[in-house]
Amino acid sequence: MLLPLLLFFLLVFTSCKDSDTSKTEPNKFSVEKQPFGTTIDGQNVELFTLRNEFGMVANISEYGAVLVSLYVPDRDGNAGDVTVGFDDTDFDSWEGNASYFGATVGRYGNRIGDGRFILDGKEYGLAKNHDSGIPCHLHGGVKGFDKVVWEGESVKKEGATGIKLTYLSKDGEEGYPGNLSVAVTYWLTDSNELIWEAEATTDQATPVNLVHHSYWNLSADHETTIYDHELQILADHFLPTDKGLIPTGEKAPVAGTPMDFRELTAIGVGVEADFEPLKIAGGYDHCWVLREGEGIRPAAKVTDPKTGRTMEILTDQAGVQFYGGNFIDGTSKGKNGTVNPHRGALCLETECFPDSPNKPDFPNGILRPGETYKHTLIHRFSW
Image (cartoon, rainbow, N blue to C red):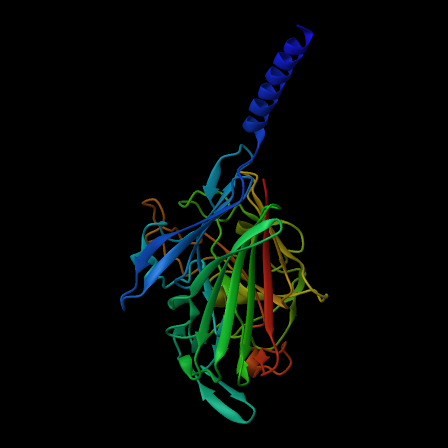
């Protein structure tokens, strides 16, 4: 009689234990794929969804290697989309994405002055596809990497699941020399990190500066500005620009200016200051010179006091472009029936300095045969 009773209590205990565990066990990593849309020229595009254990969800498109959305919990556990752009189901708007929402941009992200550069004694001409007072080349040209279809496949490693996207940029594409083989991988980790990794090789010397261009509003309220977001950039200098937003070559100290984000500072405090670099750009749209260091290191941090969400930026690059949404005019369609307000989002684009191919004193922006371009950008979230 004693043995059956012992077995009965053992089964009850095990059942209760299993039941309790199921209530607290977090969701496992997962990756899903579904059709996203068809381009104007008939190419089918897939959308990949990554999930981690703690409620983060990332949607990534083969078109433009775009981060379409990223859902992050707030301090109360409510997940919201902290990126600005278009709806997850609105492929047509993503194909017409003139603001580079969430995109992987290249072959050379940011600006190249006068749409030209000289490499090994030869001059190359590029499209002047942007005009902020003086025409320049921006984000790879008329059809940069943000407007092509990449080939995606799911990948995994310990503590993370991801999507690897590959693209071959052929010699002469958008005026750039050399066949450039590119791979970009998004990882979603169990440390609540979204990691963007880029690698590239070439068969001819060519400028390369691959940049991730997500627009962030950590409140997940797409009708608000980012004025109350608090920003820190670990940089003692920034790059002043001319009226075309091309760096002059000077590295100016941030101390005593509205460009000083060495400590957490609300963005709205200085954005309208009577300061010539801000007046030229219409707000923040400058590259900060990150402190020197080896490998991946902290670069910036932004926090939203209302929701408790914080995003830390780590990178192996020399600079970070802080763009405060100055060109969002308050009329463009946003997510969930909203309209994107002026300065309703910010970008923190880790990168080589703008116009490096024309500035010998800037970090090298030229990739040569036998070399491998590498760029790691980590977005680390807490709430």
